[in-house]
Length: 275
Image (tube, rainbow, N blue to C red; front, top):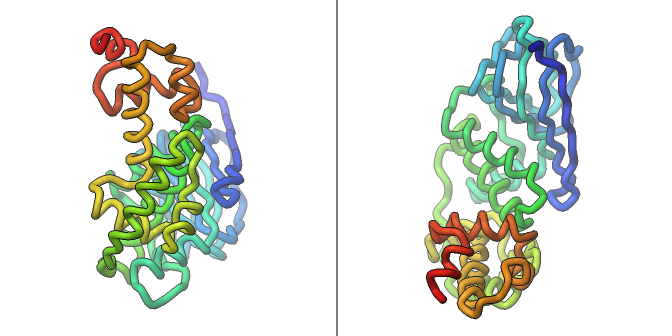
């Protein structure tokens, strides 16, 4: 069966209007244009051919394709197969903040010389996160945390000037404050921004010191707090739908999936065992 062109484009207002694209193009060609921010994506199938910074480039399956702000580029399919890719369109500010957190001294957009990058780890990270953002049940704090982690990792691994990150100054009081807040408000759709304001730290710095101190980032800690509470309610024989709502999960299906990820068994099986 012939492939058809498909385009899904959406914006996430709660992530500073982050723009995302998942598309399959067969005959479509992009004329020369520029982006105000950074365009970072992963080729899933086929190959994309484009002109960029004086070179003719080809991005095949598993490759990261990248365009920096203000750099003119075009785009077309390498063959009749077309290409399928997942794209993030990131405002410069978030990468500038990542540079500042990494260097501790400068706040400027990072520079990436290459338009096609082969990095299996990073490509898998980008694609997996893009897929995650198609699921509206994903908690906001998880979306925020992974976005910051992805951007920081990408700058560290591929920006021209940055290969090491400054040491993080530990702040046990801030970590304790963050843990207490998560434990007190776990039923809510917590925001990393609000958590960072409460701790008087940048979101980047909070994630780093929290993970170094606790062993997991804030969004995973939130998940574990919710699962712990769910276990207590399951032991009382309460319904799955009630427990999902009571512990802050989007719905029963999301609750069951997250529960199994942490415990290795379904909530129903756990309920049967515990009772």
